[in-house]
Image (cartoon, rainbow, N blue to C red; front, side, top):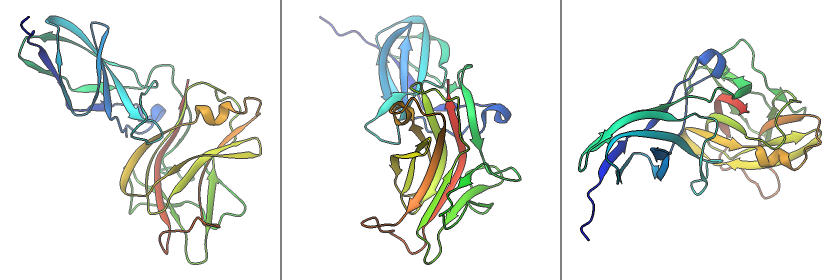
Length: 260
């Protein structure tokens, strides 16, 4: 049997658009495209992507954004808080259709916490034992006016900042902490459930700004009876954990706690 000649779809990237006032920065790290043609899943493709489609004529293409859950390359998931890019295209055998995909947050998404360090003050609370606080500075920044800097001088070995307490987060539903970061030491991210601390993931060093989506659903599912949740960001040298540098330094921007 003679092989059928396909049409092709090209997706160079998927961008995010936001209402900055209500949804914060449009910073994103969308790595994959989940593609449906006429409501049939044709595949999940790493971006930039070009792939064959055994369909012809006027077709509905729906593209969902895929991310690396917790920044892990092997944990590639569809990001359920973004809506789909929808486009009608004419698929012609042997030809390529290019789609410039753009997505937004779904209408039902709630933004319980946003911190971009551009306000007069920031919304972090500091552990009483923390050696320092976030320094709001404008030299190294992802975007906007400022970012938050963690800097540990000689003899400093501990930093920890938390969010305000949250009492209405979904205890078991989709819940993500998004943020941009750059750091020369590993960062610990996790939650306090009432007074009990749970370390969730370790963010590895990066010399460039990176966007990460931290899935907190499982972190709070273990204790659904907790009356309040706080998110923490920490850096600590103790026991076998030794800093790699003489002056640990990290930059944070565009923090968001998002959920349904």
